[in-house]
Amino acid sequence: MPKKPKIVNIRKTFRIKEGALRENPAEYIGSELVKLGVGTKFARKTELLSEETVAMFSEHAPESAPLKVRISRFFGDVSVSLFMQGTEFDPAGHTDEIGADPDEIASENALRSILIRSHGEKYKYRNKGGVNCARIFTGETEQKSRNYTMIALILGVLFGLFARFVLPAGMTQFMCDYIMDPVKTVFMNALNIIIAPVVFFSIVTCFSQFDSIKDFGKLGVKVLGMYLFTTLIAVGLGIGMFHLLRPGTFGFAASMEFSGGISPNIADAADTSLLDTIINIVPSNFVRPFVESNTLQIIFLAVLCGIAVGAIGQYSKSLKDAFEALNSLFLKLTSMIAKFIPFAAFASLTIMVVSFDVDSFLSVAAGAGVALLCYAVMMSIYGLLILVLARLNPLKFFKKTREGMLASFTLSSSSAAMPTNLRIATDKLGIAPRVAHFSIPLGATINMDGYCIFLTVMGLFLARAFGVEVSASSLVSLALMVILLSLGAPGVPGGGLVCLGVILKTINVPVEAIGLIIALNTILDMFDTMNNTTGDLAASLIVAKSEKLLDKEVYNSR
Image (cartoon, helix red, strand yellow):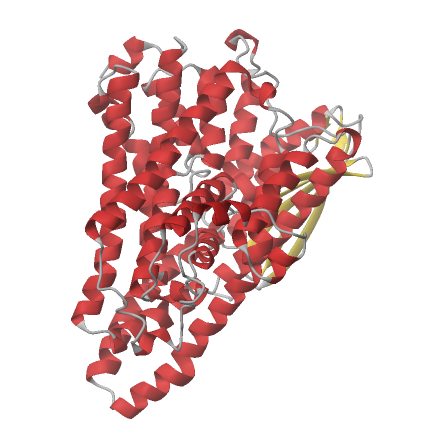
C-alpha cells in the first residue's frame, strides 16, 4: 500500500446550472476524505456537515455564485474548507427564541444548529469581504490520539518492567535521566507556556457571548441555576471525599527520583486569611497577573473583560471576533502540544515503573480511586435530585440514558455525544424540544460536573503527594477557580491538563507535578465526560418537569 502524503491541498469549484449545483459537493468531499485515509465514520459526519453548510451558504448567496471547496491535510489534521459569496449569518443560531412556542421552531434549522454545535471547536465560520467561509476538521486526529495514548500506557508499563528487572541498573538510570525525563520535562514546559493565555481567552470568549442575563428568560435562568447547583455539589463532593479518605501517603512523591527536582514552594503555601484571599483576587495592574502567573487574578480579569465585551455596544462584535480569533489560536496550540501526550505518557509511566515502590503505586491508584468513587456518588446524587425535585423514578432515567453514557464514555467528548443525548432527551425521556435544544448544547459547554471532580480531587491529591498542606483560604480559591474553569474550559485535547496546571499554581504546587498522573488522564477523562453529559440530561429533566414541559407517558414507558 502506497504511503499517504503528509501534506495535501485539493481544490475544486462547483458551478451553478439551472439553479442547482452540477455535482453534489458533499458526496465529492466524502469520497475524497476516504481516499485520504479518513475513517468512514468521520468522513460521513464531515460529509453530512458539509451538506448542511452548503445548503445554508446557498440560502444566503446570490444566484449563480460558485462554491469553492478545499480539502487539506497538514500532517495528522484533515480539514474541509468551503467558500461561497453571500451575506453573513449565524450557522449555529436557532430561529427561535428561548421559551418560544415549539410549533414556531424551524426544525430543519434546529437540526443544523445541533449538528454544528456537536462539532464544537472543529467547525469554524466567518464572513470576509462578502464571502462566507467555513472550515470543518474531521476530528479523527483526536480519536487516534486517545488510542495512541492507551497504547503508550501499556507499552510504558511493559518497558518500565523490562528496564527495572532486565536491563543493567546503569543503563536504566541513563535512559531515565537522558531520554525519558527530558521528554516529560519538555512536554510540561510546553504546557506551562499556554496555561495563562488559554484560560484568559477561553473565559473571555465564554462570558462575552451573553449581553445580559435577561436574554435567557425564565427557562434559561432555571437551566443555568440548575447547572450551577450541580457544579457546586460536584466541587463540594470532591473536597469532602478527598479529606475524608485522604488517599496516598503524604509527601510520597516529593523525595522520589520521579519528582525530578520538583520543589513545592512551601513558603508561599503558608496560610493566609480568607479576607486576604478575596482582596488578592483583584490585581493592582493588568500585566502583573500574567507575569507572575497569578491564575486567580487572570480569571478575574477574564470574567471582567468578557462581561464588558458583551456590553459595549457597537464595538462589541469586533472585540468578540478578536477574542474568538485569539482563543482559537491558543486552542490550536493546545491541540498541537496535546499530540505529544502519548510520548509524555510513555516516558512518565516508564519512569514511574522504574522508580516507584509498591506503596507509591498504591498511593497513585488510591488517588484515581477517590475520583472514580466521586463519579459514582455524583451519579447517585443525580438520581436523588430526580427523585426529590422532579418526583420521578430515577431508575427509569438511568435505564433510558445508558446509550448516552456509553457514547460519552467512548467518545470522551460532550460535544461529540450531543446528538445522541438530544435524541435521548426528546425521544426517551419525553423532554420538550424547546428545553432540550437549549439545555443540552449549553450544558455541553458550561456544565462540567465530572470535570470539576477531576480538577478538585487531582489538584488536592498532587498537593498531598508532594507534601503541600492546602490551607482553608487556598481551598476557597481552589473551589472558586474550579467553578470558573468549568464555565470556560477549553474543549480541546489536553485542555484538562491545562486547567489542572491552573489549579496547581493556585495551591502552590509546581505544574510539573502533573507528570505523576498524566498516564491516568485519558482513563479518567472518559468517566468525567460520562458524568458531565449525564448531569446535562438530569438537569434538563428536572427543569422540564418544573415547567410542565415533560411528557410523563414517554418517560414512564418501557
